[in-house]
Amino acid sequence: MASVGTGAALHIESNGVNKTGSIPVPDTANWLVYTDLVKSNISLQPGVQVLKVVFDTASPSTACGDLNWFTLTPSATNAPAMRLRVGLSKTVLADIRNGQPAPVAFGSVRAGAKAPVRTFTITNSGRALPMTLGKIKLPKGYVLLNKLPKTLAAGASAAFKVRLSTAKAGTYAGAVIIPTSVAGDTAFSFPVSGLVNKAKKKAPHAMTAAPIAATAAPAIFTAAPAQTCAGASPRSYVGLFSTRGRRLLE
Image (cartoon, rainbow, N blue to C red):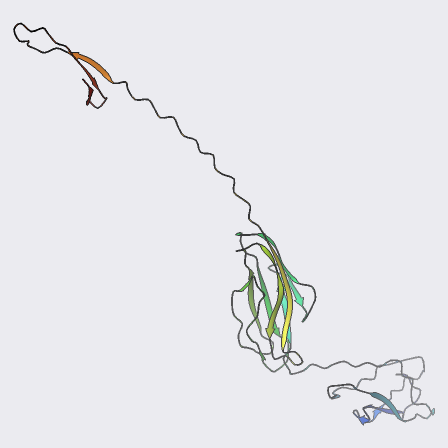
């Protein structure tokens, strides 16, 4: 606002109702010198608002003031509010917006390999009231590793972990849904995506057999009886024995 002289005043109406009462217009002593005019604790009902700036009285210069711009800033609320972040590393957290189109990526991994895990942190950024949390819903292919508390006090945080299953190859995408009591939202949701590639085929192992060592050749011997009968011709015996001494052929 800019004004020359004192005595000017204005008020602000919403849908025809005076919401501020009379506000003095500051004297800047020059129509080209502006200063901020701030009015706090204005309560507005939900819905469409028609705002009007009404100049009530003028200054001795017969002018009320020069309005350069006008803005509304929401004040902090006691109602619960959710802030959700995902860990990109041990020290880096990225904010997630409710309903954002960009998915939280779990990356690409082969079937049967170590499953990727993402850690998400929920904070109740409200000033006073607790926030209730429902059962988290996950798309196919994802596993919840721990549960959230049913309520989260103002200023408190809680973390939950989600794992992408690598049991079967495929593309896994969908929405993570967190029921909540945040004003204006019955749930907080965001997309996730991950790719599980087929496992590599293992090359067959070559089988080699060591040659079996040859055994000793069987022994052949001739044995003559110590005595012979009178008139009989001497006889010779040929025996084939194995290496264990067993006779195989006579």
